[in-house]
Image 1 (tube, one colour):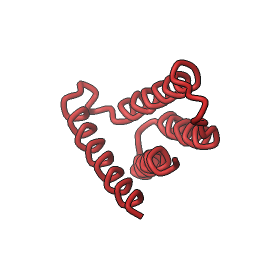
Image 2 (cartoon, helix red, strand yellow; image 1 turned 180 degrees about the vertical axis):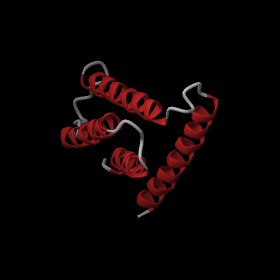
Image 3 (cartoon, one colour; image 1 turned 90 degrees about the vertical axis):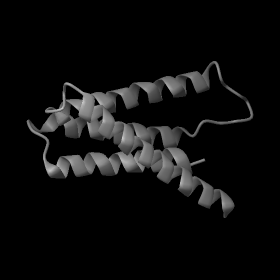
Image 4 (cartoon, one colour; image 1 turned 60 degrees about the vertical axis):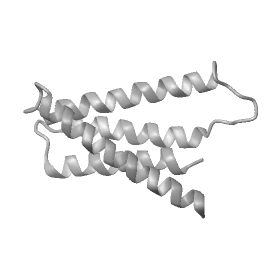
Length: 116
């Protein structure tokens, strides 16, 4: 039970930090007027760093006592691809698109933290 409480607090901390950093990046960015481009770039950054982490974990950092949750990685990959698709499908970002991107991002973060 203590682990669930700890991970819940950690989840809230990560979401808070993401909002702070995201707000700062959007405010100082020359792309301030183009939220869609910012979301698109951030989703690709997330995709590429995630793939790199899995690659490192399976090769250099591999530990025979610890297995990689491939189902977890697949679900997060699908959700990230859905975010990229949402960013590409409309000319201008709509409120519903931004809400969906936010929900997918919260879900990805929850899966990354709680699925152990």
